[in-house]
Length: 382
Image (tube, rainbow, N blue to C red):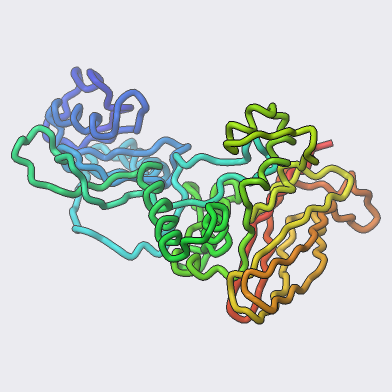
């Protein structure tokens, strides 16, 4: 039985008694409530199908009747089958818990995307976290209709699930390294993140296409690697003053944030992209731009790191120096990055532009560590 949205009252004039009802996901009521509508109308089971923008993102829900949540593409195939068959048949089979999805992690359709409209010079998101579907302890019964429900666990999805994962990683790192600053902890999580899924292929989004840097940021955290990151881009509280003053905040506003008196007239403001951040987000015109970064050696006392660049399409990236050497722990080193538009043969910079956004990465590599920073370039269309 085919129904458009399975909202309240949508099935009152349709005979769905004992049938499997095909429902399109809607925003008017929740997925669970759609199942309740089907059950109240006498339906035996429900096939809940995504809208196009939700793609392949599906959820595990405690439905009140047998139900299967399907992708938009699967829904199109089922709808085609229903329309061409006089007596269509559907079966919902329960196979128990299935683990080992080689496509994990994937970016869900509901995940926020960059770039940041407020601070375009700082790449957002920083990182992604596990959020679909998460099995965890729960203080609330799954089925609230049963007062004697004994379940202590539930499966949920959303930002509220990914946040505690990332917060837990940060807490572990702080416990392991009490002297690390918040910026150092964030950096360690970002620069050691995994950019591939369980199959060793690029992380995909809800369309099953490679996820962009504005969907995954630095990508998926690896807590073990973050505990020993090698190099760190650290930011101390006072380092934020030139940045905040450059955002045209008043002395009072900056003072409130930093809990002290600030006089921006005595500071040399810096742009967002000049902040010592473990990523790069650049709005690049026809003029080359150079930014500096400072890394601190949290790895081995005697080590050398060589830079490897995956340049964004149409962009030339040059690093000075290309090799940095450390002789002790916590030693600092600076390097400069220059971004410029590439010139095609026989063409000017103006005609070399082929995309509005381009992405790449910059990685410092030693015999033990790999410290990766994502790069996002916005090329204003002429």
